[in-house]
Length: 319
Image (cartoon, rainbow, N blue to C red):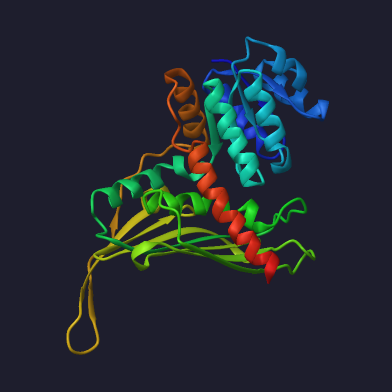
């Protein structure tokens, strides 16, 4: 495998490092030559321009760590050049563009994967295993908080910057099912027209709910996913040490003639492999390219996430 990483900025430099650690990095690209030269020197690869990468048959895949408004154009160009593509979230800014990328990848037999990073977090993988094993019973609702003070953006609101990861996790928890209704509210306090706080509510069949609260105007950092089932709750808190990142809270709920009564069991920390989600994501992409198999966060999954984001944004626009 020979991968060129496009974008060497705040996040891209981490992608560069991960592919270098996996032995697959062959080139870096950035519109700022100094940024590309810095990463190229650090990992002993070439700093190339975009057209060179597209024209080079030795480069078999590209990883796009570029602004969201460039995802469609760059991913489409790479697919048409016969490259496999890993693109950061979101896959595109419109459903039509996302569908076009999916169609191009399928027509060319190319792997198209989207960087919904937390699907590759060991704690979330362990949480999915708990749900699949019935450790929580039937799911009732899930609530995800992704909060911090800054970093503020001007190119996108907090819905498109923070919430894709949480929407992706919630859809996975509910078996990939699309919600029957999406509602969203939010406000722009720091920059007019750019929401820095949003609440997304998703209604699924059988009365199940998923909620996302995202903000970059919050007094402290919180990355916490709470999943409530009929017999237990699970909490994935990424700010905790590895031995407390995933904890199961069993309970017994008894409903009689009076008020329901709950008996809580002892919290059970779940053993989780310590590993970097980004490196696992990049390794998964490489494996999908080698095996010619659909990645976990493929274009179909990405379009389901995009549909929720688009409906949530419509709510914000109509408010």
